Length: 136
Image 1 (cartoon, rainbow, N blue to C red):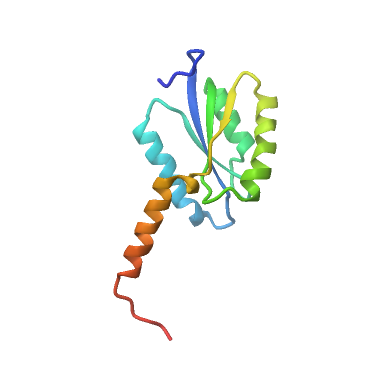
Image 2: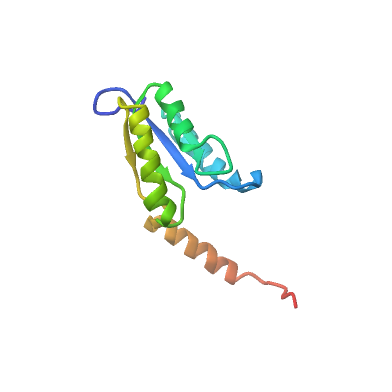
């Protein structure tokens, strides 16, 4: 079990934008599945800003109901645009108000992590080296 400073379980809330097309969520669901597989003792919930469920508030409520006393909220965004800088802090305040016994910690957007930037560059360079049939 993952422990918080108070000895209670910690959780992970992955937060993505959301889209009308359910296929859009596949990579984010894969991230959540990998997190669960690598840390089976940690409750992991994937939430969305819009168009998909659960939303951030509902996802957080699931983790609070699971007994999490501390939750890391990780935005699965490539950069810290308006949603990360403006929308998420408002939602985080609502979570804190609804679940005052839980410590909610907003982490940086994953796209700002050097490992993610390196991985995107590697994939882009590999794609550029592949033989392509040009469409005119």
